[in-house]
Image (tube, rainbow, N blue to C red; front, side, top):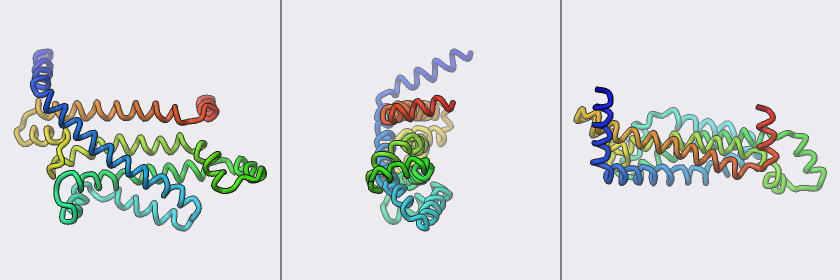
Length: 223
């Protein structure tokens, strides 16, 4: 009986494989664009607030406030300004993606050992050289962890985009809910879950590639 139900789900997904592939591509596009721009904004912002401590609480507080706002309510605010479709969806995912990256960038940079920074200053390094050659490489694993959190969360948030005509796998999920069709819900949910795992896996590999070997060895020895 169990295998029969499982085979029905597989058959249903195979019948709709072209549609699932198209919606998965849309889902990936929305997620990538939003997280890409979030990284472009949040990393420099996280770096900037390490130089202006008074601004750090304000920036993180605003990002926290956005994060606390329900996603449907945020979409409701954006639709009158941007209309329906992909634009408000991308902006919503972008705004939710900012907080983990800002916080992790700020935390990673401020937690760099002061003795290392003092040694760099003693060698005549400027603040910019210290940031580029010391702080950023040491903080990179923490920053990448923030990007991974944002990317994984963004895949889930993108399902909501289907409610306002932006496409993505949420389209199958919501259609399945309205039709009380579990196979259609599964056809949308399973690719979304696989997409989440693949993105997290790829970002984990990227994190290892961009993290200097010395830092990686130090992290392993702490474990």
